[in-house]
Image 1 (cartoon, rainbow, N blue to C red):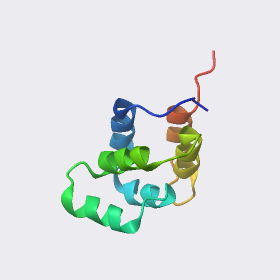
Image 2 (tube, rainbow, N blue to C red):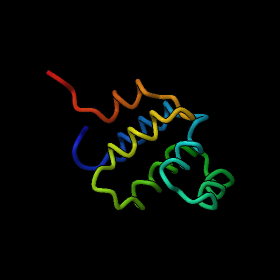
Image 3 (cartoon, rainbow, N blue to C red):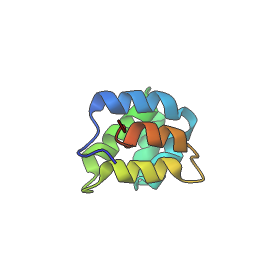
Image 4 (cartoon, rainbow, N blue to C red):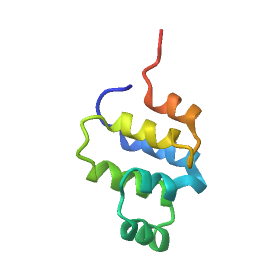
Length: 91
């Protein structure tokens, strides 16, 4: 897994790929339902805002691993995207 925390530009790039799965991903990332509902009703770029909220709220020492596991969850099903975004490139 990558070290550190995803940058805002990385999250923007990821947000463009998760589209309709953003709310399920948010639930798996432990974002409270009321926060997800607020994003749903008030934000234009819902996936990106959800990811920013997660980034600012997480206290995890392994955010890339948490994101990887959520993206790979059967309800999200974005394993290839998880590998691309969260794993270190191998030389």
